[in-house]
Length: 125
Image (cartoon, rainbow, N blue to C red; front, side, top):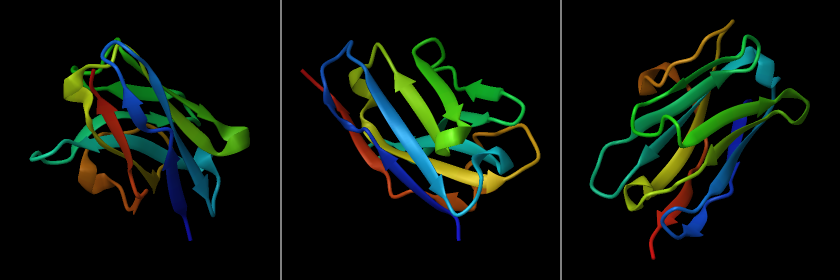
């Protein structure tokens, strides 16, 4: 059974940084596409970024491109989302998701079968 656990959320001032982690258990990270999603209060869950560590594929949505960096550590079965230059509008619950794939990734929510429990990110002064 594949399980995902996120960590690293918290309260940060505008312009600050946080690094989120998503650790996969039950299988090997290299077999999965992993996406990061977020849900802000009163809004639907939206895609943020994704990665497939077997071929290095990454993708960022326009609203985080240049500020967020996604990476994977196969030895630790962990995907990271480094978030810099944070803005109040980045405030949301952040979720990681995974699904078996030979390569590539997507931020289409319905693609993913496995989800973490979420971690809160609050950007406020």
